[in-house]
Image (cartoon, rainbow, N blue to C red):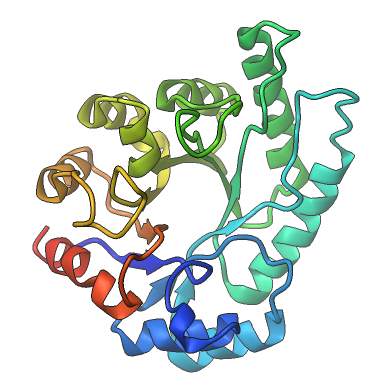
Length: 258
């Protein structure tokens, strides 16, 4: 059975603007884990209290600020300062992962050179937070619908970067929605990335709604995920088309049966 972690920036918004209240709503709906986007704008003390009160674990948060690593003047100092702040929040909230992205690709340089630069940047990032107990996970995203211009849009290239960083504290966030929109073969990508996948997110396609709102065969895809050996949490990062507690029912049932 996969442990499901609804994204509190997208789900249980019916509970109000407070991240803390959304955690409580997720707990009431039967979840013992959640994920979120960045810490900015959130009352971290109240969120910590809600997590402790409910026993819900925060599984992932985004690195801030969102960086454009390849765009001149290529000042990466804010990234490392942001990691320091992110690790501090992660420790307060008991969060084991910080999600990092590639930013926009730069048309004036070869793609391979930019990918190799990411290896260097993230190797430094891992060293920067060494001993923190926090893992960095790199997310490739689709450029066809949601993130035009993003450098990293292929799971295989995320695996290339992760192998280059070569650290137990660095891995891949595999997002089934982004992979599907890019037309990837899910089973093949999971097999290639293997143990490098440290976190998974899902949404249906097209539309990025709840499972069942699009055309993805969820029983088949969850079966492939299980067959790949992945046993970690699965983040629910989708835009619900119906009330949150109802939108999660299908994936809860399928995850329970997987």
